[in-house]
Amino acid sequence: MPWGVMAQDMVGWGIMEEGWRKGPWTSEEDRLLVEHVKLHGEGKWNNVSRLAGLKRNGKSCRLRWVNYLRPDLKRGQITPHEESIILELHARWGNRWSTIARSLPGRTDNEIKNYWRTHFKKKGNISSQNPEKSRARFLKKQQFQQQQQQRHQTDMKRMVSLLDESDNKLPSFTQLRQEMVFPSAPDEQGLLYSLINGYGGLPEASNDVVIWDGLWNLDDLHGSITNRANCQQSLAFNFC
DNA sequence: AAAGGTCCCAACCGCTAGTTT
DNA sequence: AAAACTAGCGGTTGGGACCTT
Image (cartoon, rainbow, N blue to C red; front, side, top):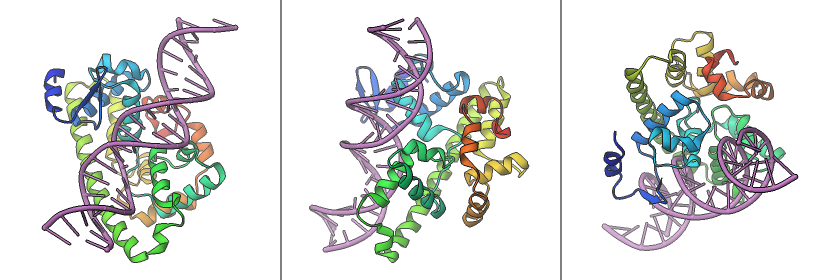
């Protein structure tokens, strides 16, 4: 879609500053960014505007990718077990959100930071103050997040099909992306990833048990995945 | 019913460290 | 060696949705 047409779509809320757009991303922008990363990989974010035709600065593109579009993101609520991990790691490292995030696969530093601020920053934990209220909120949130997750999957599905229609040049990356978004039958690697990301359709409690009772040696895992981009390109389920 | 408060999340900003030229 | 560029981090803000009074 030509920029002019795209810009028309954004009339009313898009803010242009020194030629850069700000504010919420549109699905079209998302598509362009995903396509760009598919073709060029992560990095060189300042080139995105030029190469992908996005009126976003590099920082904005990177952030959008890292926090929202990356295929390996886990969505949905923070599980109690993740919460305890966050508490533990925060006690150890303080506000080093990215460090904490590295120990929670599929979670972003931004997500953890937001979660912490919402739930723990204030004196006392809200959820311990009024269990009834807290539960109602939790259920509502869960419902909301399920909708969000469905919407995200639908969006990604659409993007995947759009991208795949346009070329079949990078089958391995395409397969990877599809597998990440829609984990397939529980073959060894797919199941592993499904378990990690909670997309496998297992009940949440099971996820927790499987994932955390064996509490993976996350440092080792992290150490082995030193370059996510390379990882993706080489069909990462071998864990590089 | 509506006004004000709270929660939550996405996105931006400023700064710094690392890398390249 | 130093300037310019790039990527990443943590703090902060804006705004929609929901809740309470």
